[in-house]
Image 1 (spheres, one colour):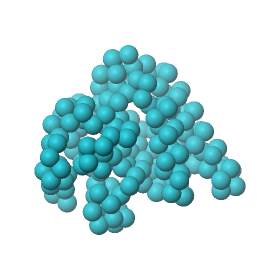
Image 2: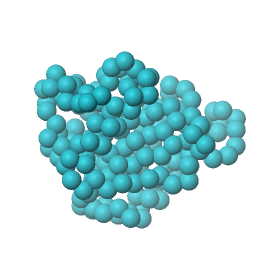
Image 3: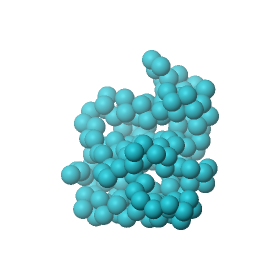
Image 4: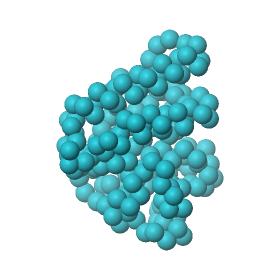
Length: 175
């Protein structure tokens, strides 16, 4: 169950840890589906799409309806799976059965999650700098150029600096 006006970390990975983004265009296709599914009653605060899993930090709206959101999320993942099945000519599950949702009750919890999400590509040795990974919201905050995230709400809820240098420095933390 998810509550209104609350921040959550949502994540899922490929079934048997298989890749879920097999081509570069798959990342954009997935984000378009996320926009259509999430943005009616949630704000995306952060995301990172990795080759075999994804992370989203969302804040639910006051009018959030968990049942409706859960149905839309299931349909979105099924639709994305069908697209990949057609692209790759395979059958079977793409994702693990349940997308996990973890409530982030404090600002400290949310800020730690925000940094964790953005650090994923660096920790996985996919890039040498956080800004090099194109499939996360890091650059939306760094460049103040929102694409899918509500950057203003993220900055407000998490006390994230607008200054790009300070934001970058704080994002690295204790890596």
